[in-house]
Image 1: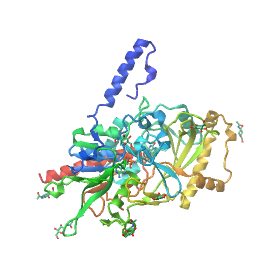
Image 2: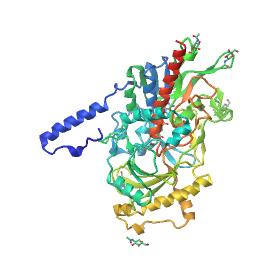
Image 3: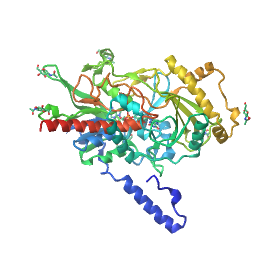
Image 4: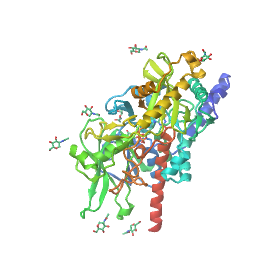
Length: 536
Ligand SMILES: Cc1cc2nc3c(=O)[nH]c(=O)nc-3n(C[C@H](O)[C@H](O)[C@H](O)COP(=O)(O)OP(=O)(O)OC[C@H]3O[C@@H](n4cnc5c(N)ncnc54)[C@H](O)[C@@H]3O)c2cc1C
Ligand SMILES: *[C@@H]1O[C@H](CO)[C@@H](O)[C@H](O)[C@H]1NC(C)=O
Ligand SMILES: *[C@@H]1O[C@H](CO)[C@@H](O)[C@H](O)[C@H]1NC(C)=O
Ligand SMILES: *[C@@H]1O[C@H](CO)[C@@H](O)[C@H](O)[C@H]1NC(C)=O
Ligand SMILES: *[C@@H]1O[C@H](CO)[C@@H](O)[C@H](O)[C@H]1NC(C)=O
Ligand SMILES: *[C@@H]1O[C@H](CO)[C@@H](O)[C@H](O)[C@H]1NC(C)=O
Ligand SMILES: *[C@@H]1O[C@H](CO)[C@@H](O)[C@H](O)[C@H]1NC(C)=O
Ligand SMILES: *[C@@H]1O[C@H](CO)[C@@H](O)[C@H](O)[C@H]1NC(C)=O
């Protein structure tokens, strides 16, 4: 499909129509080779009181591939607080990239904005597809080191990446600005040039994208088509309030029974329940799996009485499991943006498709055009510190699950991060001053402003640090979940999403979050299979 291109269409009118038709046919066949989307409803009554083998909270980047995979053998309820991405131009249209971030409201927009206690404004997805429906769509795998450190099965990881890639990942056509950025990175010494690659390799490369040749976005929701649609119900516009947990009479076993949920639009305060199936043999019970993202998953645990005694007491939430680590280790990679333009201009929004990976994988640099309003945009070069030292914390700010929790990332609080940032600013300056970028912007290369001292660069770091949107943590492995992503101290509960990461994988995390949903789904199917083979 990647090899087909509008350019190859002949110019003779009748042939053009015919070829276009055939081209669309091929595209349609290859895009809809799955089993079709599962049943979706926003009617809580249709699910209220029912039982399922697995319940997944959050139809986001990890939740959708996980649901598709588990549905191969089991019934799955997937609950998403937002609506459907299908037919929504803010999600689907590449030319509207970035507009969802400037069109937010409190309870219904596809992007929910939040401001961390650092004062940095940020966004999270609130739609089926999650943040993969509002993001830059840049797709790039994690390094082999990351996979080894995680202790994952390397072959299965590759298989899971390929499963994702065959469905929602495309080769980008470079826009003029992306081409300029590519040459700018190379001029700045980010070598070698690796061409198109999905691997995490040092140098300058073109990565994958979830935008297809027609400029349409494919979110993680499209991965649902790979499952058994008869086994999945997607409940939209529904916010999970908490998990139903009980402790047996002997008081030595705490187990999850189901979830409580409300309508997201606030039209009713009625609370509904859904349950896990409970076969006679309790070792055959499924799980509730939180895939609500780095903010949503720790928030849902806290609202369910899983967290530190002290914090839960402040909100009068009775403690089901005392687990200090919930909400700890929140991280957001510090990002420094530099305006490539001297004046705001109206350029088409442009998502990144080129990346520079440099200084022993410590810095990641990309270029993009983001709309700032409906008639203006900014052209940016942005870089992030790949492995910051500073960590923060997430806490509740309300017992309303529709409200954002409060989070602090402590950007650049650790002196090491500030030192890294100074080096990173020098890198961005080199790119901004490159002949490629200067010529494109119509600025004399020597006229681009440059900081003269480390002190000035430190000040710039502090004053202009922003999010690179790769925030993670809050339910980290070894602290909140074990190696199988099971929450400590309670049976039948897992967390599978970006909240489990100690560091953000690869250049950009989406590829690995999607892969993780598929990978853990397969692991869970295998566990059950081993189980039934041993005890038929
Ligand atoms: C603006 C932006 C740009 C980005 N650009 C890129 C990029 O180009 N490339 C890249 O690799 N990464 C990018 N990222 C990062 C990447 O998109 C995220 O790291 C990743 O999508 C997180 O996946 P997740 O599954 O952890 O969470 P999400 O995808 O956010 O999924 C969480 C889901 O849970 C739902 N939810 C939360 N709470 C509840 C509840 N109580 N009840 C029901 N549902 C709930 C949410 O609505 C959401 O759908 C970007 C992120 C943003 C925000
Ligand atoms: C679901 O919520 C979205 C966003 O608020 C809204 O646009 C949509 O109409 C809702 N769908 C239903 C069926 O209520
Ligand atoms: C709880 O206690 C009973 C007997 O007292 C025991 O059989 C069971 O294995 C215990 N369960 C757990 C999870 O420790
Ligand atoms: C339940 O299943 C487990 C593991 O599958 C097995 O060890 C156990 O014997 C089974 N118990 C009963 C009562 O069937
Ligand atoms: C918790 O309960 C106490 C006593 O009932 C009450 O005074 C306090 O306001 C409650 N706090 C919250 C956050 O609801
Ligand atoms: C964009 O439009 C708004 C009104 O919608 C106007 O106030 C603003 O000046 C315009 N900006 C530019 C750069 O044209
Ligand atoms: C917490 O909620 C209050 C209102 O309930 C709001 O004023 C405040 O800004 C919130 N704080 C954060 C950090 O979100
Ligand atoms: C920029 O400055 C360098 C030396 O400082 C000089 O060699 C070069 O010719 C200048 N380039 C332009 C375009 O003025």
